[in-house]
Length: 110
Image (cartoon, rainbow, N blue to C red; front, side, top):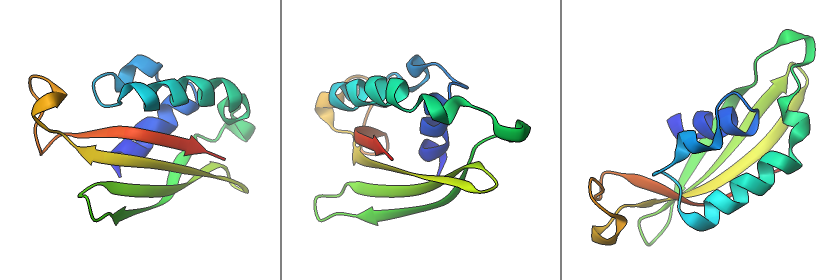
């Protein structure tokens, strides 16, 4: 899933947090800010490997949102979990947003 890869890029320091501007609501943006500091170990490149999304599954909810869980590989034998919630845009999302544009409303990583 595209968004899981972008979150991983931010958490590993390959992209700035602002790369997700407009795609993350305020609460999730604050969580990402805290996770980025708390997951400093994700930024190390062990033996020169680039972290990647190993597996990703999306689960639709009754209210039309998606709850997504991803397994990320930081190295050949180091795996971590990333979970986030995507909600479809609405009229209150601002110009350029709509039902086709998803926004992240929650994120966590372990």
